[in-house]
Amino acid sequence: MGDVLAGIHATWEFESDSVLIRFERGIRAPKLFQALRERRIPHEALESVTLSPGKRGTVVLHAVPRPGADPLMDAAAGQLKESCDPYRLVLPAERETLAEYYADELRGALPPDASEPAERHLVAAPEAPLNFKAYDGRAAFDGRQVTFRWFWTGASSEKWKAGDQTFPVAALSGVEWRSPEVFDGHLRLLRREADGSAPQADRDPASVVFGLGYGPVHESLPFAAAVLAAVRGGGGPAIPHQAVRVAADRRDPADIAERIRHLGDLHRAGLVTDDEFSAKKAELLAEL
Image (cartoon, rainbow, N blue to C red):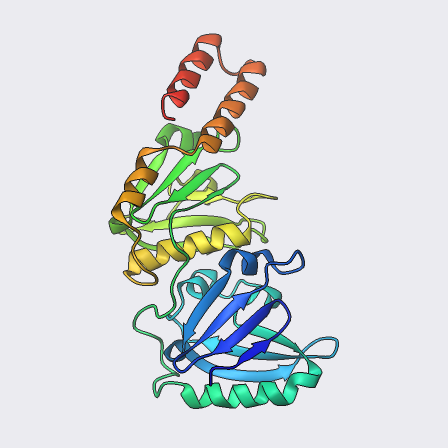
C-alpha cells in the first residue's frame, strides 16, 4: 500500500503495517478530530473492516478496533456519536470502488487473532500534560498523577471538605468516563483500594462532573484515554521527567485566576468574610 484516501474531515494514508489518519482542522470538522490531529493505527489493532452506504450520497469505510487496543475507544465505551468516530472515513459515493479496494487490502492485513481482544494497548494515547475544566473543578494530568482543583462555585460540600485531590497513577485501577452529552456526565477515577460502592459523582472526591460547556468530549475523552493508558502501562511514549516536574510544581495561571474570580463572587455575595477572602486570595497567589 502506501497510498492516500481523502475523505470528509479526514485523510487515511495506507502504510505497510498501519494506517495513518490525519484529521481535518477546519471549522466544520468535529472538535474531537481537531483535538486528536492524527493517529497511527497498526493493522494488529483492528478487528474488522467494513464498507457501507452513508448519508446523502456517501459511503463509509469503517475500520473497527479490537477491544483493548485503543485507550480512546476503551474510555469512550461506545458513547461516541457516529460523526465523531475516528475510525469512520466518510467518502463521496463515486469513490466507492476505490474504497472497496482499500477495504480489501486492510482485511488482508488483519492479524490472525483479530477477533480476540488485544492484550495491551496498540494505539498511542493522547500525550500528557492534559487538562480540562469541569463544572465543579479543573482536572489536570501530568503523566504521573491526576489532580482535581475544586471551584468555589459548583463543587459540593463533600468535595470542599475533602479538599483538592491528587491521585498517583499507581493508585488507580481504571477510569470511568460518562459523556457530557448525557444528563449525569462525569469522569471518575477508579481507585485500587476503594471499598464499597462509590457515591454519586457530584459527591465523590475522585470524580469531576460535567455540565453545559464543561468537560466537552474533545477535552475530557482524550484526558480519560491518557489516564487509562498510563494506568494500564501502555499507549504512547513517556513524557520527559523535566516536563513532569514543571507541570507538577507550577500551577496554571488561568486556573488561579478562575479560582480568585469565584472567590470574589462569594465575597460579594456575603458568603466569605473580608479576612477569609484576603487569606485565601494570598494563598492562591502564592501558588503561582
